[in-house]
Image (cartoon, rainbow, N blue to C red; front, side, top):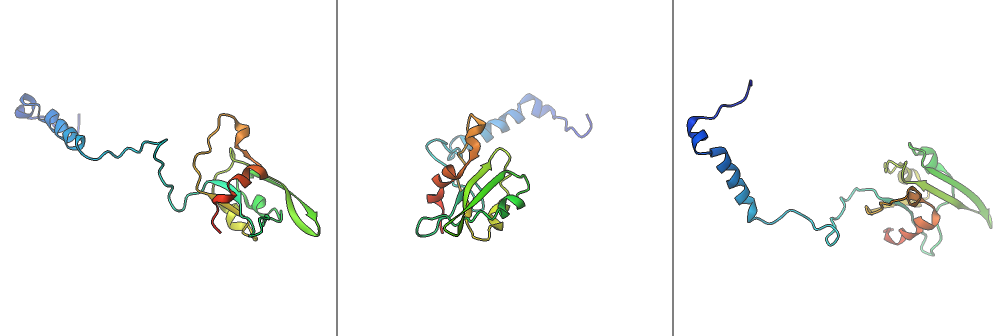
Length: 150
């Protein structure tokens, strides 16, 4: 074949390429392993990683979200559905649903929120056997609210 190097007689007789391979193996055999034992050790996500959507709360524990719907309108994958209601002349989110099977985790919803009510926490263990478990509602989003730093 074109571009392929031919072995010399010395290399053929003394298996030079095989010896080089064994030397490489021996060099890494006694070095520190690179493997992370996953269930016991967890790799820290990169600083700009995006994870599950959650709400940022006010210091008194109430939601910041006023259900303006800007996050749902700017979402390129249209994975959010928001319904708001007025309670005591204050607009609040009655329903807030995020379909993680459609979400592309771009973070545009977080950036567009005028009340700074949304966040994406550094959680990367949210796999599920059932698609319905990947549908976030307000109740599931509040589970991760404690991980948000103000």
